[in-house]
Length: 241
Length: 201
Image (cartoon, rainbow over all chains, first blue to last red; front, top):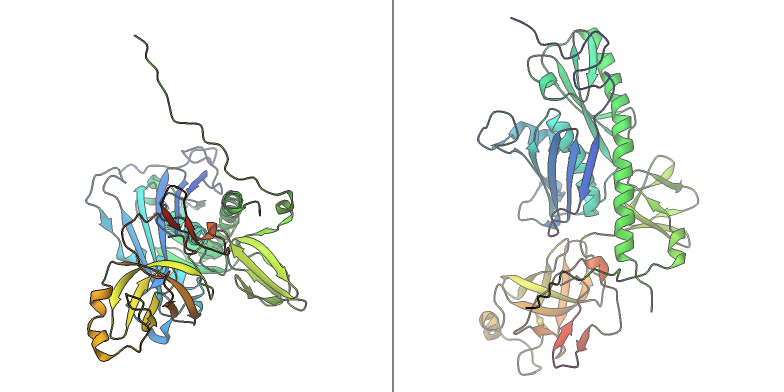
């Protein structure tokens, strides 16, 4: 069986990036005016729409009356190359929920709920990582107090070389990959999701590469938030008569 | 034959920003505002290990030793005395639950409502049965915030200007655009009345 090589002899991946380069990040806030926070987020060709509603009244009661966080992660039927029925991934939704639970200050709003809806309209690899990035941007847009900005990246190993920010072709197959989420670009992980088999010696290098890529992604997200805050300030600022 | 074609009017910028606004410090969640010893943390901030860190994206405001960060867009947070417009979502035993676009629903107690007709009397058990005749689920009501607690927002509609709203149009805007003023009820010169509620409705 011929193995498809995702990089060439010059150690450049087939989409023109180096191993530690992340893809271009684009964003647009305020897509849904009736949602409290919403963002359209692109990481290369992976396009995600995220909407956040909350904090609002909740009928569901959690133990200790903390804020209830509900995450929905769905992949549109037209998102991947093979047309499938629209899927809702429970596992990815739970991972997203766990990441956001550690970041939102839940005791500040008892008996309320925060709903996060992520829809992938084009999935070109790093689906969960892009959703986490989009969700953290949407949370900040909604004005919900958070401990910091979460950034996430998906890294994998192909033939000994560690690639960060995988795209679709690199994600396919049984190459080992991790999704690593950090807070504020610091070198502490708040969520690690890991698939397939990996040699223990490679693990530390993968995590280091993930931290490096997260610093870059965090810088982009921070810039996005500053631009959005400036835009909102101009709308809200009124000359006092 | 003369044809005139018009397009949409070019939008002019509705507001101008003051020069003083340029000095306001904008922060991102997770950024350090100052060290812990000098200041206290207010809304929109929390204590880190040795410093005060912002938890929302907005402008930093300092009042004596208190640091707060005000987000430019968020759900309406009620203050006592605000005029608000809400929609009834539930009729309970002695109160109405009102959705006011805030973190929790508002509670309008039967005792805090003036009866139609302007009568002032203590509400009896029969009034409880007739609650639904006055206001049902889906009705719009204008009220004032009486009290704000951690899990409940109490409203009152005692004076004649507050109460159930009749025919009209509801327009929703962002709550951060509504500033507190002396009067929120205005009569327009061509006969219409307008209520500018603090929660953006």
